[in-house]
Image (cartoon, rainbow, N blue to C red; front, top):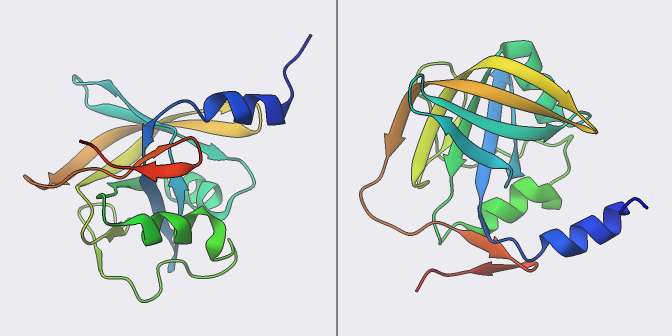
Amino acid sequence: MTITPEELRKAMRNWATGITIVTAAHEGTQHGMTVSSFTSLSLEPPLISVSLYQTSRTHGLVSASGHFGVTILAANQEEISNRFAGRIPDTDDRLAGLNLETLVSGAPFITGGLTFFDCRVSQSIPVGTNTLFIGEILAANSQDEGNPLIYCNQSYQQLK
């Protein structure tokens, strides 16, 4: 017996996760999407991973540029998470009107985020409907204060 996509979605709702925005830029186009499938993989070399839906615009830009950025959102950035989770269509410029920063690769980062990771794709692995991108961290910037935006059971949560 195989679990259905809806059964898996329902089961995964019990997993609390931080919220990130994965961004990429290539040949004058930039885009991003909300991603909770993010993790640290290695300290030596410094590696992280993200999983992106293969038909997403962000996936295409990461594949074409060979770089991506990850912004870990702060607790007060729910609106940003919603914007990049699809409240603004994938075809529109989700970064329009936001204050942005860059580090090394040119990938945009959202000002006010807790941490930025600027990465070079070191490996990409097709996995079902997604691609697992392993990124070597080229540069990072993090805030000393603030709490992350947390998501669990279809709602945002606060650390206590």
